[in-house]
Length: 483
Image 1 (tube, rainbow, N blue to C red):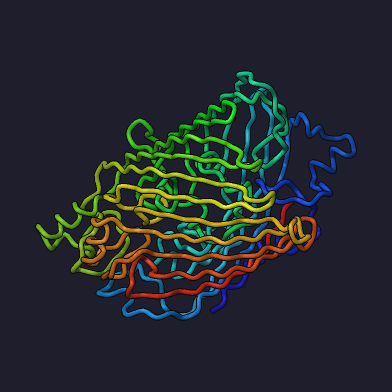
Image 2: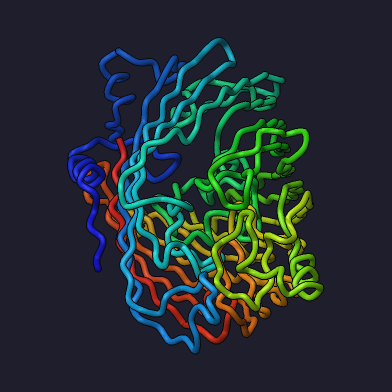
């Protein structure tokens, strides 16, 4: 059955066809700045150079089709995490309002309510980094849900080094700041607001569709089931260098909505170092990111050892939190959960090769000993891609892109899946281990000042790291509006 857009989200999207343009967070924008902030500024009612407040918003609809694909088996022995090999339609619809307010000199507050409805393929099971729509959240429904995605306070402390202009944007008040500065953030946010920021300033809602390119697929950053956390971030910007550290809350149970606020006991830490450079007069940047999670989660080898010592400790007998497998011959992570650590390190490189064309490269290694607690099931990941704005062919507000990603399993993770275990996303009941590989290509056409229509194609090899299944094709379309 083809899921139909819920009335509220659909009506908001199509009503936005006459909306005006804005500086998306951040993205391509026509020359005739016509968003609310700029319209007010042109009439002398708002100061973009020194904003006391701002308001931005976006609406996005993504519709996708997965035709039937070959699979030697599906949900073997009562396992539950296979991507179904039948035809499926899926969608996400989001509406977001970004509200910013200056509290005092250097102090800012942001609140971001969001509305989402979704219908994922196979209840969001059976894929690792290759989840084809990055907007999908665990536990979402067809019925639109309103929630607070962000509510945080930011303090900027100037340290000299000259002055630079910070443009008005969602979650950024227009102002002038020292180039050398310390920025402190406390509250509720996505860690991706501050770490591993999007390539070339192209808003993901105007970029590649696949979750594989939102960030490192192997970065299991601590967050709730929607991808948001509570905590704090400190960032030091010093000329061409930036150093960031953040500590954020994990979920109480893996991949669930409730978070554990005991940051002194369970936490996700990340440290990132960034350098900005110019090569042949073109901008680029390089980053290194390391993370350390200390969370209540299970180790794969502990789950296997518990099952081998006592076959009654299987996937069907656990009375605690589990993912509902009916495979009585398989180990289960619920028998192995205790305080555990997960660590990883990644690198990122982006480089413009022409004024409106850039390439990027990401890679991450994580230890792969513990279950996915918040993000994807990948233990290692590598991706590369190219993004371009359409100025070269006379369409400056259009965007095009190509991305390739590969996700990998650790030996311990593969053995757990081979025995029939499942985790938060994958587990077919058996496995022929192989890298899960994704190709994603899209083109986004600017229809009106604030409206884009995109087409997308994805090819996924070895879904859920299993060579016994696939390949999978995904066809998608996206309507995106800004105001």
